Image 1 (cartoon, rainbow, N blue to C red):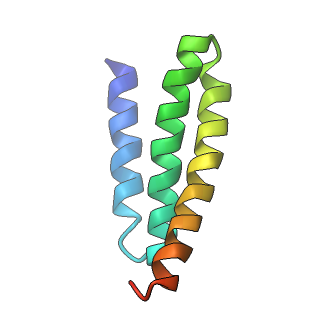
Image 2 (cartoon, rainbow, N blue to C red; image 1 turned 90 degrees about the vertical axis):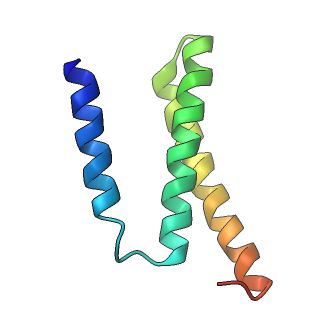
Length: 77
């Protein structure tokens, strides 16, 4: 229960700090969050959730950046 409360507090603080972010920063953050959570689940199944989260988070940030560049090259945002 304590762990869940800490995670909720951290999530709330992260979301509150996103108000003044650019579209690039928002996409990179959301990509990193999705990648880290997916990587942690895959890593958990493979036996190392921390490594999975780190690799997934890095891949997610890169994916968010590339998606942002793609959208901007098409004239969106």
